[in-house]
Length: 182
Image (cartoon, rainbow, N blue to C red; front, side, top):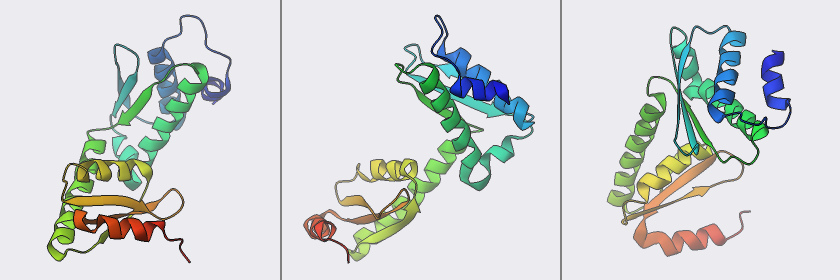
């Protein structure tokens, strides 16, 4: 356990230390200390702007349980370790297992398409369940490709609902959003 904590809270960037080495050391520590039967593959962009980690093996189902919370946790850990060890580096880190993230995004897009159809057919607003920021981003980006529809996040805190409405109702929706809630 000291190895992982040292990576997170350890010293400053060492001369010549590379992002892939930091990521690999951390992944090895997580796998060993977690007792997982996993292997990994690390792909680093040529300009070191992104790192993709693919985890696979006997325990990959654990990673995908509860909407991939363990994948998210490992991704956050890796991001924090790299930020701490290399504070000047701007690196986007993605951790996936067996295409889980793509499948999850496709499921969100499928539901967004269904709700978009309802909003256009009934010419009324519809709401998407409360979602974390990364999932809301997927939906907003997908819906932004259709100029007949608009969307925005509604609510306070980390998890917010998404309001989907026909573009003709945009002024009305913006006025509602500007009004303070009681």
